Image 1: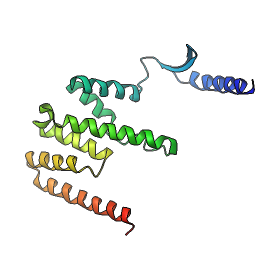
Image 2 (image 1 turned 120 degrees about the vertical axis):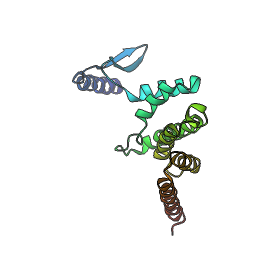
Image 3 (image 1 turned 90 degrees about the horizontal axis):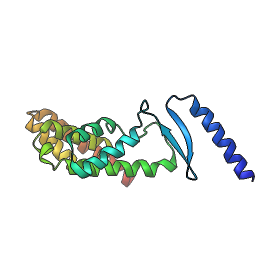
Length: 170
C-alpha cells in the first residue's frame, strides 16, 4: 500500500512537471505508463529508430541523410550516468556497424563527399576505427586533398599510440 502511494505521488509530480512542457504528456494505457508527444515535439531517439529501420530495409538516401543529422555527435555527451553507459556504448556500436555497411553501398562508395561524411560520423563514435580511417583517407585523396589525408592519418596514428599507452599503463 505504501509503495502504491509513493508511486502515485511520483506520477502526480511527473504529470505536473510535464504539464509545463507543451506537447508532452504522461498517459496510462493497458496497465502501463507512456510518454506521448504531439507533432510539435521532435524526439530524436524515436526518429533515430525509424531511420535505422528504414536503412536496414531499404538503404534510402533520405533516411541516411536524416540519420546523419542526428548522430553527428556522441550520444548524450553531457550525461555521465553509469547505468546509461551500456546503452550509449551499444547504440554507438550499432551506429558504427550500420554506417560501415552503408559505406559498401554504391550510392556512398562512388561519392567521395558522402563517404567522407560517413567516415567522420563513424570516427565520432569510434575514433580508432581503422576501416573508417582508411576509407576517409581514400575519400580525401579522391577529392585531391592529399595534405589533409596525410594529416588525418598522422593524427589518428598519434591517437592510437596514446590509447595504447594508456591501456598498457605507460
